[in-house]
Length: 176
Ligand code: PRP
Ligand code: ADE
Image (tube, rainbow, N blue to C red; front, side):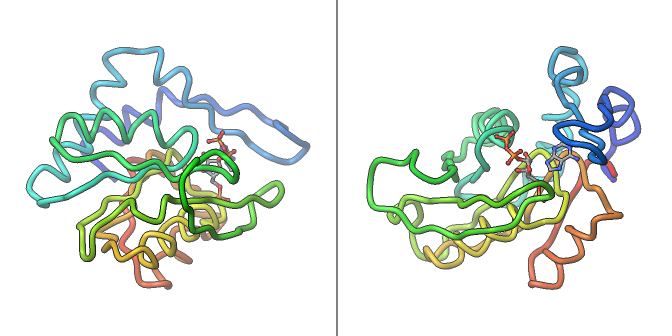
């Protein structure tokens, strides 16, 4: 939990049964619409990562981009998008993964990182952990070093963060 975890949690909306029956969708749009809350969110990541000597922020399509880009700007790092299949124009490497509701595939440009670059990987939410784990594995395959994976929301009952830790990656969540 971060310095502003309880506050950030209080401005996230839960929409029951969306996009399908039985899913409690954690909607970050009220957080983004609240300029003070959005600033506190980015500040909580800055607070954690400003001394970590990162080379790049990698963020996952699409909601991960919303937090990854301002953090990269603030820390003076480069920004690398990890995208859904078919969106990146150059040579790519890819991994498939299972979602809470469906399957998907993430891609990375093959030249995105230099050997041993220190990378922070970001996404808005960890549910089953499949997306974050696939992206972390992609980064490792491309030669980058995943210093940590970071998210706004962890859903601990789905076991995703534990699965990512079991695979050897560190996980930071602003709130659960
Ligand atoms: C959501 C969310 C994470 C992922 C988490 O993305 O933004 O990327 O699911 O689920 P997991 O831990 O079970 O893998 P989604 O694919 O819905 O895409 P979006 O960001 O484009 O809305
Ligand atoms: N992505 C996967 N599961 C989700 C959930 N419960 N809320 C928001 N985004 C999600």
